[in-house]
Image (cartoon, rainbow, N blue to C red):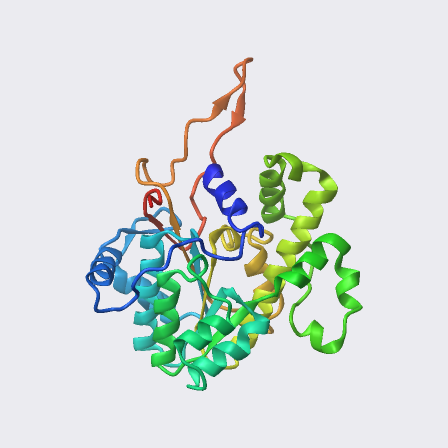
Length: 330
C-alpha cells in the first residue's frame, strides 16, 4: 500500500489532496462508456473492513443512508473507483432526498460558482470556467455526482481551503493565517486538538521518502498544509449537516483511512471534534490491489541479521468497506 500512498502524495503536490488527474470523457449517462462503467461499478465485490466478509450493494447503501456522514475515500482518477462512488451517491439520493454532496476538489472561494450553476444563473460552460475546471481536474465521476445533486435539487459544498491559504500555512505557519481579515478567515479553518497519532506518522513517513522534501522543518510545513485541508473540510462537512444528511464527501483516501482509531484520520478527527453529538460516519475506500488475499498484506521484510523490519501494512480496518479495484491503467 505504501507505493500507492506515495503516488497519492505526489499527485497535484499539493500533498495528499487536491485535484484529480483524469482526462475528461463523455459523462453522459446515455453513452456506451457510461453504461458499461455503471454496470461494472455495481458488480464489484465490496468487503467489510473488519475482515468479516462480503457486503452486498444494498447493505452498503442502507448503511450509508442511515449515516450522518459518508466519506468516499478515492484514488484520484481511478475510473472504477470513481464510478463506484457515483453509483452509491445516486442510490443515496433515492433513499435520502435530503442528502448533501461535498467535494474536496472545489475550494470555498468557488462556492458562488457552484451555487450559480445549481440555481440556473450560469450554464455548464460558464460554471466550469468560473470554477476553474479543465481536462486535468474534472473527472467524469465527479461530474456525474455533481450533476446528480443538481438534478435532485440538492446542494454541493465546495469544501476545501483555497491553495493560497494552504500555502501560507506551510510557509508561514498558522499565526500568519490568524492575522488575516474576517472575510479571508471564512475561506479556511485551523485544526482543533492534538495532531499526534497514526495519521501524522504515516504522513511524515511518506515525506521522508521524497528526497528534497525529507527535512523535518519542510515536512512539518507540509503537514500544516495537510492539517488545514482536513480542518477546513471537516468544518465544511459539519456546516453541511445543517442543510441535510447524510453529507457525502468525496476526498483522497489518505485523509480518511483508519478513521476508527483516534488520531488515525486527520479528517475524521476534525469532523468529530467539531460536532456536539456522536456522529455515524461510514467510509468506503477503493484500493489498487487485485492479486492478493484479503487484508493479508505482504511477507514481512527481513534484514541481514534475520530480524523482521516490518513490511506492507494490512488493509484491515482501513475503512468500513473496501473494494479492490486493480491498478489504474490509462
